[in-house]
Length: 128
Ligand SMILES: [Zn+2]
Image (tube, rainbow, N blue to C red):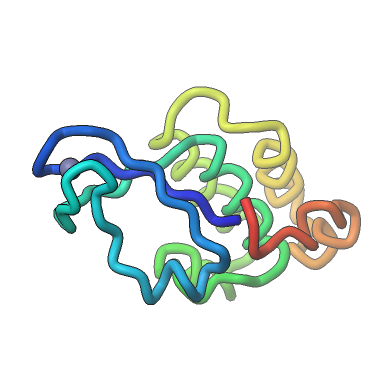
């Protein structure tokens, strides 16, 4: 299930919200479970980032992420470079699947080829 972490700007606490689907996430207004404020800032969890980017990259579930949708028609090496930069912003080691996908893109493999050889990820596009 998609899980998102937020910091509440009203009470300063961290909030973790889980949605059944990405569609539900799109429609929902996240509110703080502590003080009910809607003034939340999304935090990017490196694990969630790795898994969601990797699975959505492979399964083509780009729709709700503009930064990724712009990459949809990029060549594999460009895609790999941009993903590596995104990973660097998240920091640390964001997961072996992500590294493998980026390495394969760097070698010029298409997302279709990568998806075919990593079916666990390709089949996991709607959950984290
Ligand atoms: Zn709050």
